Image (tube, rainbow, N blue to C red; front, side):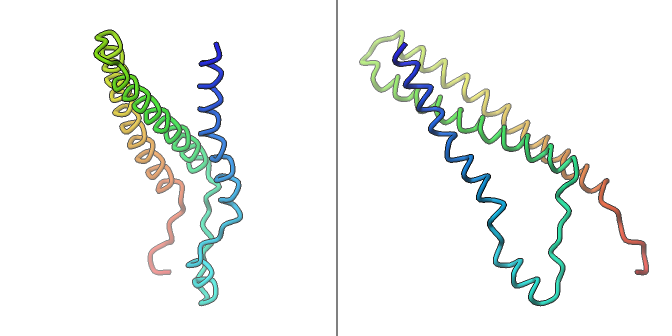
Length: 133
């Protein structure tokens, strides 16, 4: 039971800094945007569309799943290294690595599909300027 609590606290501590990264994102302003605004270019980008918001949420979740893959792979490697020739522990580590790798492949495909759909939806929902203006 104590091991599960420690593991839970460790996983939570991995995700805790992410909250601060998301909070700091709104306060940060790109220096290139400052230069563009000073020279008269408009840097207003409408990122409030539904497709952009949903795509951002899905990408954040998939990023967290990537962190979970890393933790599982690290755990399986540690289990394998400390197996001391115990075939059961080695087999368990191999199964964890196999499952984590399959999961990573699914995450990468999901991320690619999400990126494709989000960019396509953004293209369709963005009004185009008429020709000649």
